[in-house]
Image (cartoon, rainbow, N blue to C red; front, side):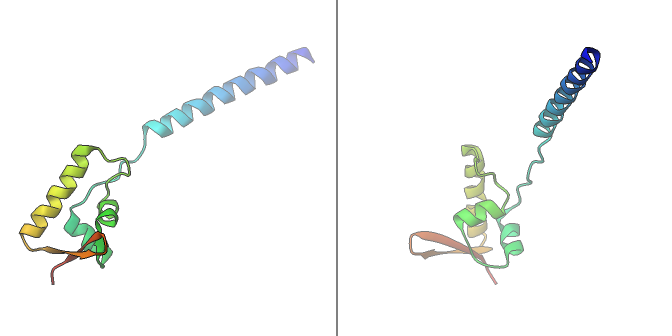
Length: 100
């Protein structure tokens, strides 16, 4: 009986260690969402989007770094300068839509 308990404990320890490794591997292999240009995000959405919605649809993470946010706004500025998108003020939010 003592031998059986030792075997069960050893098996449980091995299963537990294997499970921990799997969890760690899953965390290290997170799929990174691909960032797309704001014009493509608006085309995919097929509707006007607020800046917050556009940020999300463009694939930026919720915890985007300052550099990522700056890239996002530079992309918006470029699209506005090229007259590919428009910006309207609705209440206290900017709303972006494709031209044409």
